[in-house]
Image (cartoon, rainbow, N blue to C red; front, side, top):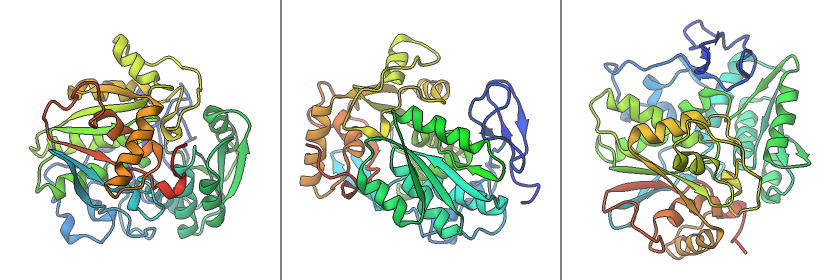
Length: 370
């Protein structure tokens, strides 16, 4: 790995670390890393001249030099969903979820670091993405998942050659088990939460929206939030594009009503979120009771002039079926944004503004909600 590769920095206490030797989290506060990287707004940005993958945005990505890991991810369609609302079909990514955007970055980083093995934790989609891209990179992979994850998702992980460890307890128990394993020598922790390279992959979602809308962004980006990897990636891209003169959108964050620590903290005016119980919900992909990047997520939504919305499972069912009738079969979590701003919403949170929302995961991964 070259010295030009950006290093880690902790936003809480300023601790810095070299990517080649750093622990998986800040050694002072045990929090997630950020990246010491800000693209030059004067640097050329011409994605049409790049490869047919998210590496087309190489000038704003933090991995310098030639890449070798890719499955032509990205460039997902942006299609009309309703008046002034477009949907971006990220369920058409290679492993059928938006997590491929971050997983390809982690796999390329891991390939350059050459660990003995890769570990990850996931409620499903991140694990399948990491497993696939590790297979592409020729890296052994082990994924820790909580009990109750869709068998179709764990089957997909195993099909890619990953070892799957099912952990008793909820999502947090799986994360703790993976972090314990990540402390072992020769292990790369491909965490979509703690490793900031993942966020610099998900930010390509917004760069693609900008490209498809002819160099502008909508007035609102509606984004599902559990650990906040898509929203924080979006916030990175918005900040970078704003420095290039693009008008920034408001960020509307959507959580399941059953597990909504961030929405509750936002409503209370709090800077951080208190943990909440891990209750059952159809939106398993965003059911995160204690998101490690809570402070950053809350700050990003407030800075954008946005807000939080929550949706009950009844609306998730309706939204999943409504999207299917429109031609889009997505998993319940992927229907959360449409559930929040669709025709059954008690008010009109968009207030007539133009908006883009993601359809993040394919229905083939989970089936129709009961």
